[in-house]
Length: 193
Image (cartoon, rainbow, N blue to C red; front, side):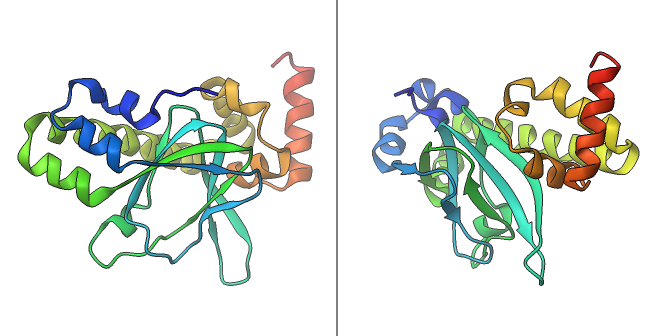
């Protein structure tokens, strides 16, 4: 398990003014596989970093059906942007797929630092751009690619995660049934990947 700070690495913390203040305010939490990091519709004005492990981010509909928006592994970050706004509540839930070590820091602290230091403003802007790019790519894949093409794209962009994610969860992420994904996996294997 890495003792490095995932958020510190993402933000290049050692070069940021008042980084020790963030490091001191950061909490580190061990989350067992299957445990909920946060639920949908909670007050969670925090940014999370993944030091170790794997987390799925998912929506629940009114009937309790799960729709997986993304997976976050080591060195990644996540937050419910809706929950970061004043009075906001999470629009999705986060669940550990593996035993995970997570960092958590209050967004208000980061926002305060960004309002006072250009370097912090740039660092948070870079994180937001990375998040926006991921969202745009995901949206494009869902709207323009077939299920098999989405699976192939996932294998290409996330080869490290593909073997760690249960097939039922990967199917939900790709928008297909587990049986449908099983057929796609077989076809891809038969054609040599």
